[in-house]
Image: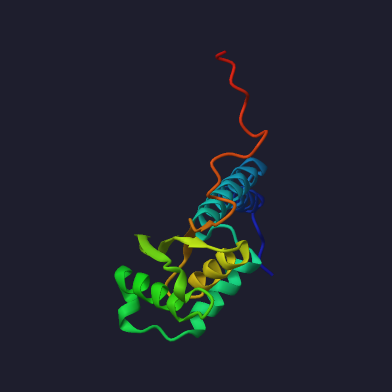
Length: 163
């Protein structure tokens, strides 16, 4: 049986304690790293929310519809998207003779102009334009005859006070 010197054992325990204290994390370090991790996660979350944008049911449906539609090479250009939107409006039997115009605003954004007979026709034109592959945003500037061509509505304008 080997005898262990008491001073050697004390020196060994002191060295082991020093090694443990250098490798273990203090409560301050744990709180600091948890705070850094939480802050980093929030920053990344906000950045992704801005990049992805507002996710709602109609937007997801439009994205799914666009993924199902085959994309022709002409729809890869903004002018091709505008031509395809105008063709979709011209192909509809109710909207064909109304002379609606499609203006390209930016990549994926078109603006509709012209006159229709009812709000339902205006909404129909907007839906048709949104259904075209490559169209992400539709600015519907179509006017309704009988509503938008009035000069003023009685009681809408203030009375003339210059008299």
